Image (cartoon, rainbow, N blue to C red; front, side):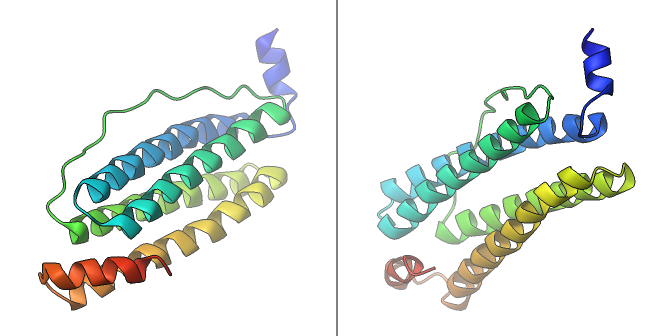
Length: 170
């Protein structure tokens, strides 16, 4: 019976499988950003902590958006396993560089799913994913901006705290 239902979906089964994998990636990103927020809190980077708490919530919202999309279209969304994440970072710059790499990786996966939608003629899912493509561009830009700011100021820790306050406007 399940195979009959899966064959008559309005969205492509390959796409559903890829979207379920993306749910796991978004969950992982949320956990990574939560760990980064904790590091920032522990090291006095209050504005970056708030930024990463917000990022963690955004990633969870992305996960839920995909989860609901799958279920609303007759698929079965799977709750992801919570992965173990790193909680140790060398510096605030290390955190933002790691966050940038996280966003680049998620962008690549979103693009892969988007192109699969196109290949499989899953127009609905392609349109759904367009929002994520745009969102990822914005997320990468935020992280690139932060990395650039901290790289320009080198290892001056006192200056990093002043820069942290500037991040509240990012």
